[in-house]
Length: 138
Image (cartoon, rainbow, N blue to C red; front, top):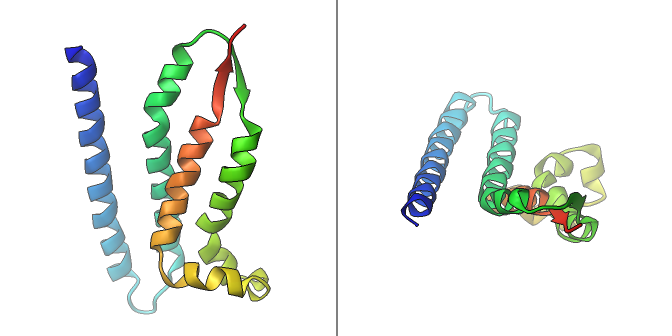
């Protein structure tokens, strides 16, 4: 019991430190790119960090499933229904400012001006990716 509590505590501290370092680094990225501003490195960092955080949030469940006996399978329904839209909106900043963005501007405009939605969708996508892997009993 104590070992599990210690592991969860370390896991939580690691997540908090990772988020703190990510926020600090994103501020540095913004200040480095202030003149002439190139948003692509900051966007790439936001996406990578948010997907990584989502993966880490799903890690305890993945480890629990890893220990179960059975054959690995992918839950395609979850990936298609939750993962695909969250992936689309995770990359909405890049899509909005591409040539395809002209056709999807009505949908993507709110996502392009605030990065919070992109970060939340990145976390959702990372979490969905890792949780969509399951073991089916033999």
